[in-house]
Image (cartoon, rainbow, N blue to C red; front, side):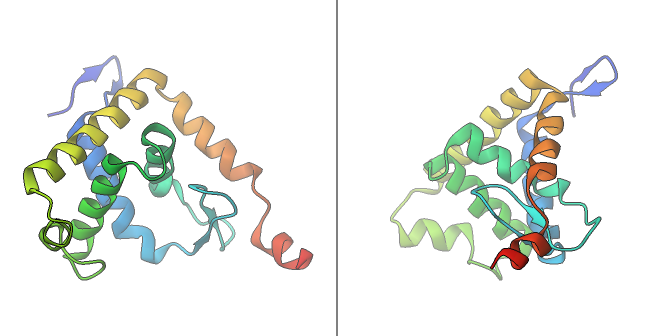
Length: 146
C-alpha cells in the first residue's frame, strides 16, 4: 500500500524497488548512450528514457559504487531478467561469501534512502532529471564531432 499526500503518491521502499525493477525490464528496449555517469540519452529521437531516471537518481543518493546501490541494482536486474543476465542474487552472495540477510538489508536501505530523497524533493526530482536529459547533446551531434 502506498501512502498518499494530497493528490501525489508518496514514495515507499517497495515503490522504489518496483521502479528499479521496471527500469531493468525496459532497459534492453531503450537504446541509450551515457555521455556522463548516470545520465541516459536516447539514441532514437522522442524515445522516453524516464523509466531509467531512478537508476540515475540512485547514484546521486547512494554514491556510484556504494554497497547499497550495488545490492539494489543486482537485485532488480536479477528479478527483471529472471537471473538470465548477471546471475541471481544467490549466486552473487555465494561468490562474495556474503550472507543473504546482509544483502537484503543493503538493498532495503538503498530503497529507503531513495524514497526519502524523492519524497523530500517531490516533483522537483523528475524536473531536474528531465532537464539533465535535455542538456545532453543528441547522439548525432556527438558523432559529427568525432
